[in-house]
Image 1 (cartoon, one colour):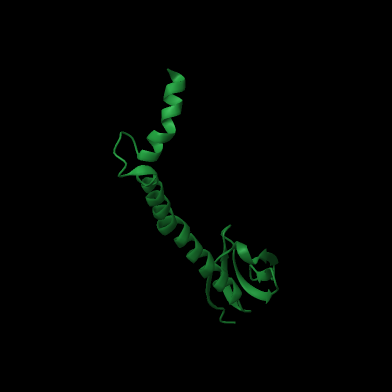
Image 2 (cartoon, rainbow, N blue to C red):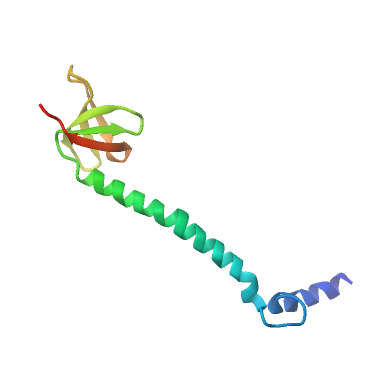
Amino acid sequence: MISTLLVGLPSFLLTGGGTDSSGGIFGLLLPFVLIFGVFYFFIYRPQQKREQEHNEMVDQLQRGDQIVTIGGIHGTVRRVDDDSILAQVDSNGVKLRIDKQAISSVGGQDNE
């Protein structure tokens, strides 16, 4: 009995069940294609756009820009390197080296 079911299973999948062959395997794959499309347009694509905007923001950093890191540290950019920046974080001259990818937002220019 089980062997009969296993032999009939591939034809059942190819015809979409029953004897009517109007749906076939495409009828089975349609929900998966729709789910993939929803994930692409509502999750993956917006994330790519946010990442691109963040990279553009980081690439435009200049000396004197006010920044906030993802850890909540506020500072003023003093030097921009390839992968990091040197930021002054208080009026006593304390400086921190911060990865560019750790920058959450960029404000305007410092008025010194």
